[in-house]
Length: 359
Image (cartoon, rainbow, N blue to C red; front, side):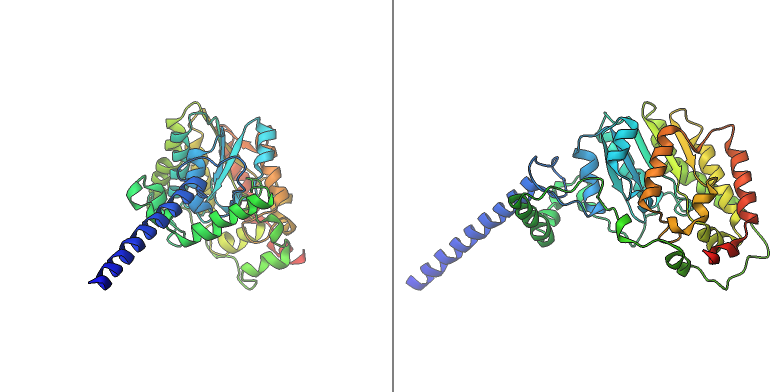
């Protein structure tokens, strides 16, 4: 009998200890909140910014800002400090590497719904990700719905997560104790300094024996309809819903090797041009929207020293894009976009692509 009492007492003490431990872990995670799920960052805590799909939702909902930079990985090298200086704003960056229009549009919408102070959105319009069904998301990208569904009952996946506790909360407390400054949006997901540039790194992504297609094709009616539905659901819907916000959308300048490997060789260059025309046409229907395209800067696009692969450009080019947008350079209008893309098509259709291999 005495032994049973001892085991019962031990069991009760163990349960109480476990409950207290779980409560302490939950309190610590909620208090520090490394993914900003519950609140804005606590002043003085050295936060780690390195996980966009787990941190972006909390960032756009809970940070204080009046400008948003978003888009695919081509926006990860943008410096918010430069955007702040150029546009006179306080900006955050919430990029989605490999993100399709649905995911980026949802994140943009969450920011607009959560923050009535937003006056500027800067976003990439990647043509590659435009040609999908409106609801399509990247199946290879993390989708932490337990952070975005607003359902508190599944937050245990966040609160009792070993990676969150040890790789973030514990690491942030140690950094804070050591006086290490917290990460900022200039460096959030930035990779410019980590990748080498030039022809040797870019040309390995294309087949140097591939030859131009014999025939070139445009968009089919089905492709055109799908593109329009995607644009209207995930791009212009936000523009229309927030007429007091200025939307600066840009078509990122992929390099000349991308034009060759993905459009000249495949024969879809006319379809590529038409896709950009439709993007510009749809966005430019709104007075609060701006469209920028940099393919007329042929010195930029044809110089592979500006690129680390077919699509990603240097940090200096990222700075240039922001600067040009602030100055209104390379901006398209409803009166100029068609002629602009006709000239672009002529240049890239007739370019001597053998020059790539002489760089």
